[in-house]
Image (cartoon, rainbow, N blue to C red; front, side):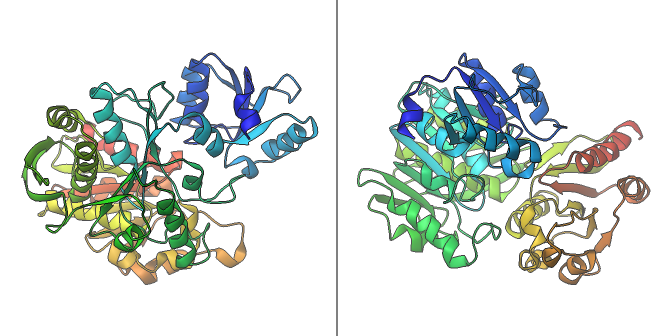
Length: 467
């Protein structure tokens, strides 16, 4: 792989270019002067299609030939016949190729490498750290898996010694081990460690061992920041050769001693080893306050000026589709969120309950994530939706594997009578228009699927126009 890294590659072709990692990577490489093309499914949807269009990158048009200097293989290349055929052609023509994960490891990760790992909070924490380091003038390279409302690209390769990377434990495509194990690391945030990717790990022990391997990579002059209240984090920190710093409980080095919610903003009081720091945010929910705490804790530990940190937190707008609020003319509140796993669902709904205790919470749930095809992943959904008054289940994604298919009845057995199965999008729109009333919160939860997002937006648009 070092040979590929050092080779001058002017024409780059990306298989599976319409991914959350590969599309921004393609745009970044194009901005660096490379000729970039790619292939994927025939129809590519927003926001990915917008990224590629804005960068003037052509997709599904190039014929594989020796003119390609380097092929980057995204994790979804096995999903489409076109990209599978092209990969065989690339091998036959002996075109140098590398996985997108390894390309990131070689070209984006720097000497002062910060990784943010764990089951929850990675994207928000990473992007906030990027914002802090950017305002501090440290010009970091970075990668995170969402669309920043501060107008940061989700991937940027810069020349400084700093990099900040959202570190995912999943295993897909050419990558045969956890993605984050490819990344060099000096500083690590560990938020929480649960067995989420059951499609990647056969047992909870396998999942734990992947994180253990990551922690063991830390150098003696590094640092690990762990969530004291996170699952398995304390246990994993014992495998670290580096300094261990803790956050999120009164016994930790950093913790929230108080927070005051005032309409659309919250004042958070953070106790640090040396002083009390007061920050202000417009983000919603305790889980976001914990994300802020983790980013602030690491930034302080690495010597970033407190004034810059406070300015960054106050001006940080968050990530699209992470409890993103939509305005309404009626006393009905709308949120769009990415949550799919039980832990994320519970965290998001609990945050809404904290901010709107007198409201009825209704959810449109699009079970889009692949791990929701595993019946074990449904076991905690009853507890996850405990703060919801009603759950509307959208049409299920049917697994190709007949043995893994789950039904609406499987969901109802876990969630209970509050669940209503409405498979047709137009019927969901009609139901919402007929049943939503003042003092309701409607939360759309989906990790993808343009039809589901458009259905939610139709409902929001109706209530924005009709008083």
